[in-house]
Length: 184
Image (cartoon, rainbow, N blue to C red):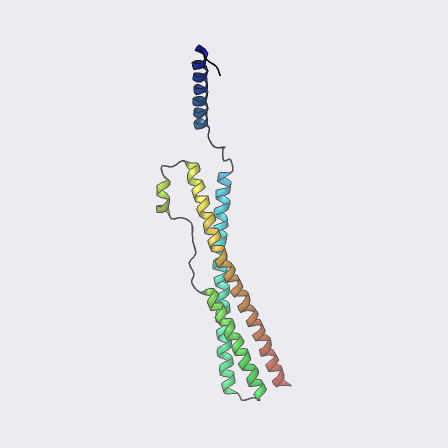
């Protein structure tokens, strides 16, 4: 333990050193974010691509929905107007059930769901007085959450599209088999 006139001086130097370190920490800025603009542009492009994918899937589901409905209507009128053997009627009933399942799957996929979109301009007003980097980081975080939210809904929509298409294909094959059975 030191005593004497130098003790106070040593304490004063250590206090000054702590104050200087605290000032230095306050003056230190976070590392520069050189690729912030690139990340923002790419994130925005990913969300835009996701929105166009949703629109494309809706178009496909609409086509599957209408095609299934038209084929069901044609088969119902065909089955009512022509009398064939019982095997043909059973096979046509199975085809109608399969096509109706395709119709339901397409309807479920086409069902209106909530999707998140880019932030509205009014929501961005609070960032007018913020630093540009902070604003860009907030937008990137929001767009990332939008992308993740929408992705799970897109997976469901793709699954419904695949199921509907597969059932429609099976129905078309069975219709072909039914007509071939009646021709032979």
